[in-house]
Amino acid sequence: MDNWTAALLTGVACIVGYLVVRVKKISSLRQAEEKIKRARNRRDESLQRAEQAVLRYKESHPTTDSAFILTLSLSELTQQLKEGSLSPEDVLYSYMEKTLAVNKKLNCCTEILLESLDQLKTVGSNKDGLLYGVPVSIKENIAFKDHDCSCGVVINLDQPAEKDSVLVEVLKKQGAIPFVKTNLAQALISYDCSNPIYGQTVNPHNPQKTSGGSSGGEAALVGGGGSLLGIGTDLGGSIRLPSSFCGICGFKPTAQRLSLQGFRSIYRGQKSVASSAGPMARDVDSLALCMQALLCDHMFSLDPTVPPLPFNMEIYRSSRPLRIGYLENDGYLQPSPSMARGVREVKALLEQAGHTLVPYSPLKISQIVPELLIKGVYADGTATLLQKLKGGLLDPSLKQQVFTHSLPKWFKKILSFLLKPVSPRLSSIVSAICGVRSVSDLWKQHAAVEDYIQETIAHWRSCNIDVLLSPMIGPASRLLHADKLATAVSCTMLYNLLKFPAGVVTVSTVTAEDEEELKHYKGCYQDSLDKFLKEAVSGGEGLPVAVQCVALPWQDELCLRFMKEVEQLVKESKK
Image 1 (tube, helix red, strand yellow):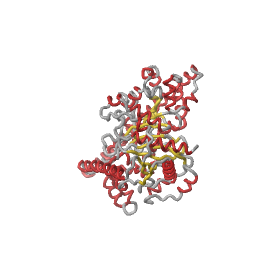
Image 2: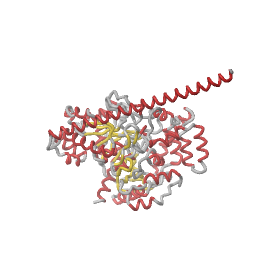
Image 3: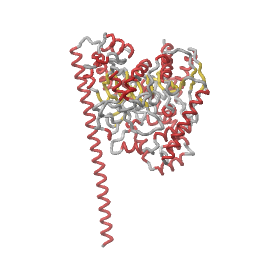
Image 4: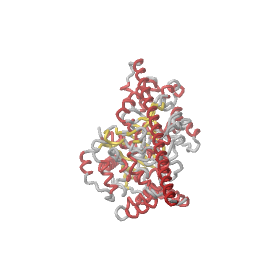
């Protein structure tokens, strides 16, 4: 009888324990759903109020030529605003109307910043600012007072920022008007742009394709014509890849060139791979003007940890011939046919313009990707990421990735061992996401990163090059396929690790010949990752093709000058 009673009590305890866990999980999901509902209501209300404000303005200002305003480049717009031939009111309402229209097609906005309408009353006090009267869009994870910075993660909702980020303060000081927050990838770790709070953002050139991530809302809005200038963030290509996908220009400055105070990150404290804030726009001159505006005494005062280096316009405007390294295939990622063609065509244009082109290859890339890039970001074995996602809804674009991350460490080690004979590259990635074993190992990894940076700089100088031309991943991948672009880190995250400035310029579009050649794509390793990339970028005829321009640390102006050269030569070649 005692044994029966003990067994019964044990069974009851197990059932009760299961029910308690189940109830907690259901309660947690309900709380998450309520948070999401409140966030969506805030977004919908801001969109409705913005629409009403635009209608009222149009009724009271029927002569406003919005179509003309939307055709102006940033430099043309700033000039007309300074001269007084355009008013900040006309410009803001024109772009707000366009943004609302673009958002209906692309789902790229998380909230209209209605405070921008109030800022119109005081913007005249900053008429001397370089961005006076310019509407600016900002990525959702950038702090704007009284608004959430969720990073697409439910746990971060209902925590409005107490004050503006440093860059938002500087933008306002320069006369800019931040007017909308834009969508991003959940937890900032995907090359897609989707999360359970605000949904999927699609590509302005093809709604069956993603806008890219994680700054995909910015890229879609700028590419769709709803914003002239945006601010994104880039940890592993999050400015450059969406810019490439959406056919715009994007720039990742040298790490720490711009302040990150007030920017929310999922991996705060991770030091191996550096994140940067940077501008996204229709042309390179707009990127340069934004950098010039941000690199001012006001930013250096607000954030003394940023080196006080103003923008060097002399370098940006220089015209001396450059010695340019070029890279088509790094040995880890075989570029798609359109990517390779983009590099070859730009190389030919640069040579015709009098520049010297020399071959370049990155050092030890097959070891660097798993050991420094992936293990650097996931040094904690993905514990921080999983903790942030706990209790919330998971976006479909992340499910496969998070499933792998959630496996026990011992199982991942066994899986890595079993994969080694059949797919050594995938084996090394699975091993890398296990993270480091100890603080001592973390310090060794930090030292290895420092050593690799110095080795790369020495290699760069031995090649005697000023800048580097490299492929940029593309064309835009199909929806829910961006997780198949894991190999892209070798041409994106590499420059975050190195802390090199890098930017992308759109140079072409995918042709029928590119698509035909893609059918015969094999890849560097001819493994599942190569097959995934081929599958993800197929069906891209007519989509934008970009190249990447890179320079040494703190040579941001030279990098932008190189980007401008590429942009200009491509434009002239099409005439």
